Length: 267
Image (cartoon, rainbow, N blue to C red; front, side):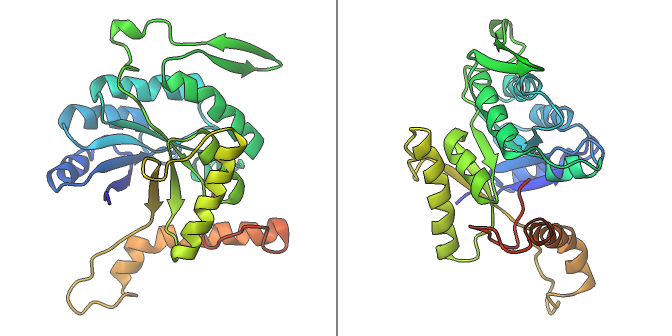
């Protein structure tokens, strides 16, 4: 099992990632929310120049705020700085969109986006929809050092509901999940991921398909209670995100929709 960190992108706090590498953390996921934090790609570029072994990527990049060619170019640029240790986490944009008063992308739009960006991350041609038309696109100068597609950039799709988990199986090299409450929940998650892969004619190899459980942790001081003010300050934001998601589900559906697993959210 790998243990990584997921942090708000902050151009003045790269030491956090450097220290994580020194301590042996496997991954640094830098969050993407344009109205809250620094630009994730600028922050990743700084982290890439000061580290040498830790895996670096978006945690997660948002589909609703950047066209697929922009996100592909951004992460491929980071791959040119940190070849072989770059990954692309991607989601529909719960926080980044809602902070602007907008909803995350709908599932159909998210599906189309992933279908476009997948080939672009491999340096291949993709079909890009702009307005009413479609056109083939690809990066035309990857051999000039601007980007790196020679070293694979795995795509990890954020999925916390049945439909987005199916898209993770359909398009992703891995999935970003909520922390499963028990083995039965994880078995249900696998069934959703594999169903999406099967519908797309793909076969999931569980040994190679990378799953990441997103959660929050805090190390208690000796004698400290689990509900101390410090623990609440460290973990409260993530707990409340789960509460808001659960509320939205009941408000929108009036009941638990099929496959609903609380308290989790689609990012």
